[in-house]
Image (tube, rainbow, N blue to C red; front, side, top):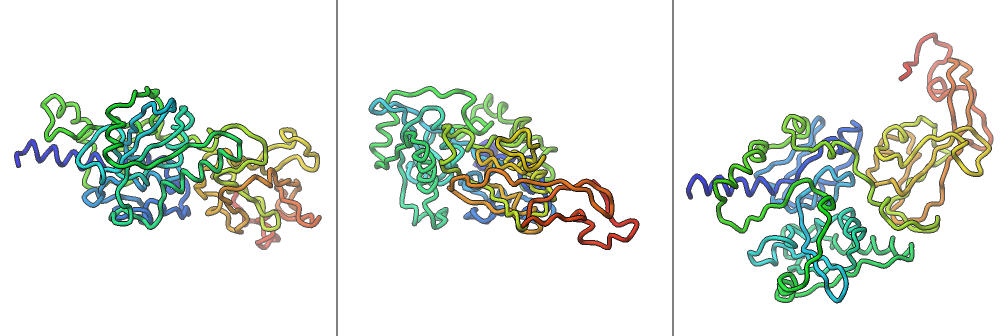
Length: 388
């Protein structure tokens, strides 16, 4: 193999490595985060989670994209591009698993159907797409198979959310390879907004065996940023993440059609008022303000307290930072449920020992006289508390 061909094959392999937006990862936001979704889902065991870093073995990763779909914060992403067409008057998405593509590449061919995340499906739905035509092999015989039909599960969950809002569902049908390729070649195409795609990386067509000189120069800026082992702690130095990727991702639940309070939500945080000690850790760590501390004036029908924890399920991504950060296990996350608890009222008091103003949830009418710090320590000592 010539040096140019070897270079092209190496670049092609490295381009399949998931794009990383380190600032979004929950492990960069909280040291005690317990998320291991990317590690658990990877069929090649390419991800390595250590105490001080999360890294990927690029020589092991096969670019399946399953980790990106499992990440609630869109911190990982493998470029994918649907083939968008009109079929029987409906805007239609064509997706084919590369294992069943028989060497074909381009729009619609994805590493794995199970790498299509709920966020990506919701984005297509918001763009007006009404159905998906897929072509797949036998998943159970694929080395990437995780034991679950994740694509159908996510599509079913999305349609449950839509049905609860009395909105049209996203239809799906599976066809054979011959019909799928016929659709892609002959159906009228549908234009998609340039700002629509989730990834900031433009998918590359690898149908050529080797790039031209001009193409090599164009890829050079990317090639020099790819390393044999990519770690989160050096991500900013590599400058792979764009400015937008350093910002928290927009919760995809917020894109669902508007509806009343009886609808289902992907994730619903619930606060246990009997366990909660009002430490505010969940509020401070939530990257999307799904849990907030608001004044009573901002709440309808609330006149018992000047403060309350407010729950916004439309902003919850299911990252579970609130659950991981609660040392009294007062926070739980419920999937595909309606919102029953909207607020947790809080009362205010002044600590008898240290004089600090604090708030606490109502617990059978008991009014504490000490703040949560003094209640756990010897409050007769002169110095025991460090205030943030």
